[in-house]
Amino acid sequence: MSNSTSAARPWDIEAARNLYNIHRWGAKYYDINDEGHVVARPLQDAGVAVDLTDVIEEAKARGLKFPLLIRFQDILRHRVESLNQSFRNSIAEYGYRGRYRGVFPIKVNQLREVVEEILDAGKPFDFGLEVGSKPELLAGLALQNQIGSLIVCNGYKDAEFIKMAMLGIKLGKTVILVVEKLEELRQIIAISKQLNVEPLLGIRARLLSRGAGRGASSGGENAKFGLSTAELLEATELLKAENLGHCFKLLHFHVGSQVPDILTVKKAVQEAGRLYAKLHKMGFPISYLDVGGGLGVDYDGSRSAFDSSTNYTLQEYTNDVVYYIADVCNAENVPHPDIISESGRAIVAHHSVLIVEVFGAIEKIRPGEFLKFGEKEHPLVNELLDIRKHLAKLNKIEAYHDALERREDAQHMFTLGVLDLPDKAKIEDLYWQISREVVEHYKGHAYVPEEIRKLEDSLSDQYLCNFSVFQSLGAGPAISHHADCPPERAAHARGHARGYHL
Ligand SMILES: Cc1ncc(COP(=O)(O)O)c(C=O)c1O
Image 1 (cartoon, rainbow, N blue to C red):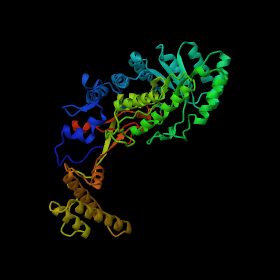
Image 2: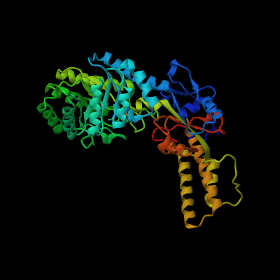
Image 3: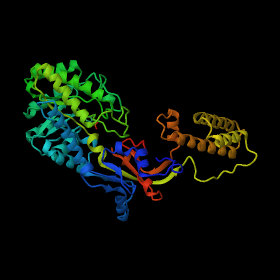
Image 4: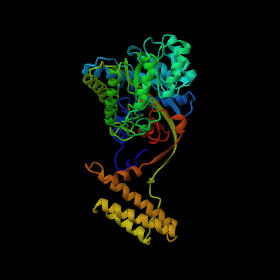
């Protein structure tokens, strides 16, 4: 998406930075260099900048076709280290007595190179994996060879899945089966007796706290997964009756993915912390509290509670998780559990860039005058010409409303068959010219009316890009590449996991 204001204002790098908000969503991993090219900085300020235009040229020289996915393994490392470091900072700050034992949910990116890089970067932190299906568990058992790192099994589990997890335990791996439904627990107990292996058990609690945003249905009392309070108590009775209470090691919850509002996190962590404390006091030696996924990515850089953003930073997230668990545990006088989070998108979102070819652009205002205005014009055309002529002296918002009204009148007349095509074209063209000048007038004003902001968006050019959102987009930025664009405008459009920004 680009903006057609270059005629009125020189287009420079600062203007591009501001328009595309790159310094906010780029999270210091992406910027624009002095040549006006998008650069990636995999180690943020501590490392080199990779010019994406160079990468594109190199790819073209090698005959590679677009769309092209570029992945920065160093960004993955940096994300894993940042997440772990952030939890460590919070643990130190609040005198927390447990550890952070993060796991990466394989379903978020199943590429072998991605999972291996994350595990390698996570070695110093005993970073583990979360799996949600049999194939993921198989991959997890093969890839996770760090003694002590966790493999947390969520999702629907059939007998084979459970057996495989038990075999993992036999192999000396820390495979925790998280019970999502009560029947699963009965099955796990039966299979563990069959195989003569004690399970490591977790239970997913269905919290009442629920978030807003895209993944909100994963939380709350109507969530598909997790045990209600009554079912949780039934599960504890079952465990006691089977003499397996000591196997209950982990309490899990997940309020949804991409949680935009930190208040959701605060409430959920407090509720789960209380559950943990009560269960611990009932005699269950739970040593892990798993706060699930949800750590969001500020895709649009607005630092807000909109779905495509987050109103918190990574450090604020880890501070809240650690602080509230400590707070409840201190009040209830129970040990601080190790904290697990299953952050997926927050680890992988920044590391991949999709380069797509731009094969055309739709411009609202065509460069150059191609419509000729004569002496005798349609009254609506004359009125718009008049507004355009005197715009400098007119109240801009009123002038815009007048132009809008004329365009709507023209639309009605055309539908009724009383306006011909050339007049319709002139009216629309004049409307966009006036709109552009009105938008220009508000540039730099402290207050810009909402409708003018929307008008500015609708004045944007739309690029036509050649790619499939479903096949090509992971969870990273998308950059459009257009051979005919001046370099400063060639590689700067941005999309994200849902692809709706392009
Ligand atoms: C149980 C569970 N854990 C973790 C995640 C990953 O969430 P996110 O990518 O928001 O960190 C998901 C995704 O929805 C999930 O369902």
